[in-house]
Image (cartoon, rainbow, N blue to C red; front, side, top):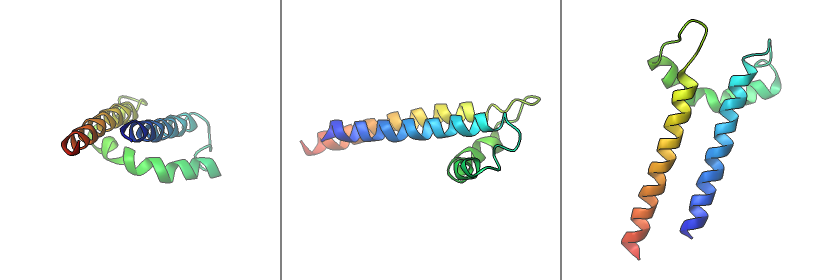
Length: 92
């Protein structure tokens, strides 16, 4: 059961990871974020990126907040792995 939870969390993390990367790549093309896919990704990804954009300033035209957001996503999922493992060990 624990392995299934890890696998599910891993796949969810990977899907969201690639959604963020796709949203970032859409910013390189003119009017791509105004498309259906850009709008859909924006509704899912932008609420997560917004707090990072408030904290981390842009350097020229480079926005470093998505990189920090991806690192934070990895840390959160790793933390969830550890918390779930701890809870499961309590009941075994």
